Length: 313
Length: 308
Image (cartoon, rainbow over all chains, first blue to last red; front, side):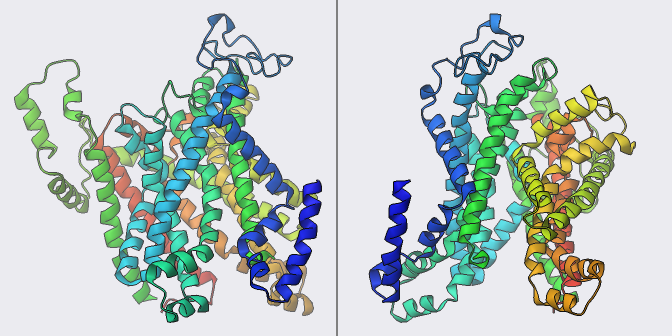
């Protein structure tokens, strides 16, 4: 709390500074910082950001949350052992799965696969799509024609279907094969967003000014256009991150994504689905965690979009 | 308009060949020998293998296989699956099922998604609006396969309102539950898109004019507001209908529907190359036609857009 008050007071001199047109405080009025000021006040952003921080923490250090081995099965604890609500953070908290493994431990350890796939795929598609979209939007002409046709081609092949075909080729599938398949098929979505954004920004006066001052192509692209064109890409990427996590779970659920010994919510949901009538909790917990994760990223994307979209101000 | 359609049709040609070649490449360069698999445990007779390879064109370089395949496709021959059944007859069985399911899902998207979006868009900030936003957010975050099993358990197993799996896809009542599950995600998007669009148009000048003229509320909403707000929604619905026609691997799997998605999934798992490529070729055509129709609908709905 004291932190917030301090920053609020600090904003006042910054405002005055902007009025007297000093160069330094003016920098503080950039779109990114403006959005950040706006975001901090939104409950949705705070909730989703906290959730994501927690998820990343779980993914990075699952041992902090449970000391139970997620792969250790004790058949005495078969599905019949219902969740024990008094055993908070213990092995039996969420019950046991078909092989007597602690569902709570598996839910905790399953976060890593989802978070790694989600983040790596998003970074991959943003870099690939951002670069190709930048080239297509900036140079136009035949470069644009070629890149646009390629994106059209990829749009004709549904993501899930293409991923199934690619992943079927791997006999051993790890997190990285899933990341590879999703990046290979998903990057064109970002290309389209980036291209549209760059075309709009390219016509701005400051780009012409930079050109007139003799700035090189690279400098114009990365110093002038990129910071102003990246906002829509960030929004789409954040929302898509949740979608990639859901796609990974779907692929694992279909038996063509991740495999044992990798722990994935999708795999666990698939094995729980057969006993949904006798042990619904075995499906409920991994599915719940998966939904919360997807929800957190979608909410974050929504909040970021509202903050970055000047039309809504 | 004619010029525009012609240009779009010409642009479709490279996309069609590109997308089909991409899937051809992915399917046929994958490791695994379908011909050897046909013999199972028995030792394969080399002469027979060679003859089968020749029959399926597998002894040719990939680009020749592709050209041969495309030549056949233009004669409406989608080849024969490795089990000996013609791919055309496989598709003739699967597509009607998927189309029926897609139409049921589409019905839900329009008749549930649109009204929800309309209500929440008109009454922004009300309890109804918050409820719609919350429900759609939850639906978007729950993966379809979880939603499918939950719906199946509640409505079929526990309440017994419907059969858990679809035995006869011509019986529409059996398709209601799978259709609703399949529609859920798009339905949520339709509701949110309608809400946003209505929210934007409510502030438009023509709305103030319509109110000032003293037009009745229903006329304003149906003739002025809805017509203008539906443009982005129609785009989404059009693209989505194209996607629905492609079958739903997950939903069809859960409810045991013998549609395109189910057949495709099995074909991918058993490396049935001809079936996969055949179905995907048709899907690419469906996708291309759907996106063209959507762009043309734009011009019909929005008089500001004119394709010269």
